Image (tube, rainbow, N blue to C red; front, side, top):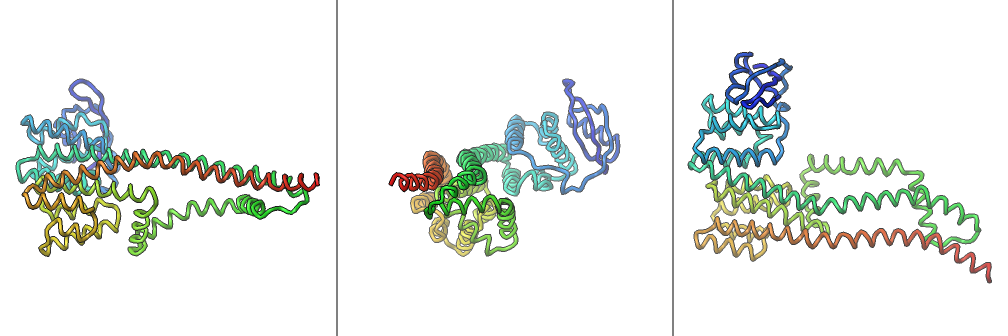
Amino acid sequence: MDTYKYKAVDGVGRSVAGSMDAANLTDLEMRLSRMGLDLVHYREQRRRSPVFRFKRTSRHELINFSFHLEQLLRAGVPVVDALSDLGSTIDDPSFRDVVAELVEAIEGGRTFSEALSAFPGVFGNVYVSMVRVGEESGRLGEVLRDLAAMLRWQDEMIAYAKQVMIYPMIVLAVVGSVIVFLMIYLVPKLTSFLRTMGSELPAHTKALIAVSHFFVNWWYALVILAIVTPVTIRYLARNSPGFRYRWDGFKLSVPLFGELSYKIRLARFSNYFSMMYSSGITVLDALRLSRALMDNVVLERAIERVQEQIAEGETISEAFANAGLFPSLVVRMMRVGETSGALDDALDNVSYFYTREVREAVERLQPAIQPVLTVILGLLVGWIMLSVISPIYDTITTLNF
């Protein structure tokens, strides 16, 4: 097949542009027609590798896709027709091409989940697995509704994380700029003045001069260090399992942010695990898929131990208690759910518990960050003022004497 860049119009005359794979011009027109589009202009373009053909789709697009597809299926519209209708309303050209490929795959005899699995960069393993279970159980509409809710929840958690991080990053950038200005411009000028006074400088003033001298003469080393350090950490984290384990453990132990990171990850795990279990995915498969979403080797290995213990015959609550992942209150909720046969409700409660914990942690962390950064900046400015004023005061005292 060749790749064509096209311009078309929909039923109301709105212009739509994008690219699509087709065997020839006639095939291109037929594919666009199935999407409710009429071809206006086309241009054959060089076919890209499948790895790079589809860029990552935004979570907002996936949420809208899942919600609208669920509404159409609930109204009784067949999957192919529903996808064709959605394809003509999607603004993102790349995602519109993905939907067109889904229509083609389903018309070619593949199931919806099989068509989705061809785009792992767009639809993750969790999405595909839940759709497969929805097809097999006849509850595809309900599963898509749950997926939309899950993606909206994930968006909310990311917003909470950004809410915590943006303010400290801005303040740290301002503090860093102030430090650079003081050490490179202001302190050298004050140093020249202090040295002309001829008196013995106190230790804290000498320390200030030494730090300023380092900034002036070795600023490029600081720039290189700021670039090399994160690159080195990322490289080692990807290529050294031992370093990755220690680094991920360190991130969970960082004051203030470590606890929040831990709760965000457990909230994500609980939400996904609960959603998949309620959709009919087996416990071991749900754990396997949820483990890959943790983005932390320490927690991934803990969940892996839970999987092994459940496979060996342990109950879910006992396995989580042995792994030390959840506090006793959460384990007790899971145990009650197992005993009563309402484990899905218990998992929903666990998800709610950690979602609330994240919100409360954010609310506690934000007021705590400001005074800490204020104290740091105050100590820095106080050190500079003391280091400058102290020699002047000593000189004046000597002269008066």
